[in-house]
Length: 158
View 1: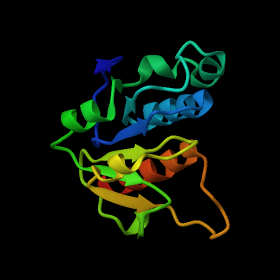
View 2 (view 1 turned 135 degrees about the vertical axis):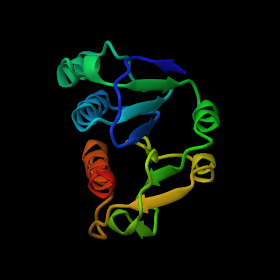
View 3 (view 1 turned 45 degrees about the horizontal axis):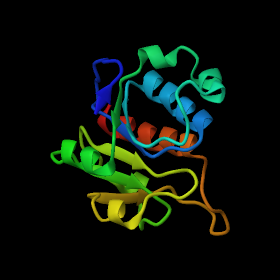
View 4 (view 1 turned 120 degrees about the vertical axis):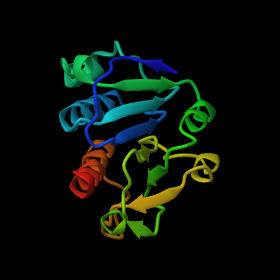
């Protein structure tokens, strides 16, 4: 695990990304987490480098004001967070996020933009929740999903 910058959290929200593969989305999520006071945890490998021009254009200087931890594998992530509740935001869930009771220090986990998370990760999470959508739509952009989930967490826990 590698930690970039430390900032105190007020509400305890942690957002985790499983092997993100679109640099602009990850940069946007870093900005969102920075603005909302949430920490970000990235389970590697990423599908891009942090030096990627597309990443840098969107992240701007928010990288300097963000708490980000990197994990080398899903095993390392789950081992390090064994005492926290990991809540997977997924289109495959039956529970709607607005009906879910968040707890302080929950970790909201989001899958890869291109493929979600594999079954072994599904089996390790504590809860699964979804954002309701029209039936003929695949999914929202991950950065929008993070903002929606994070906002509900903060609304509930202040």
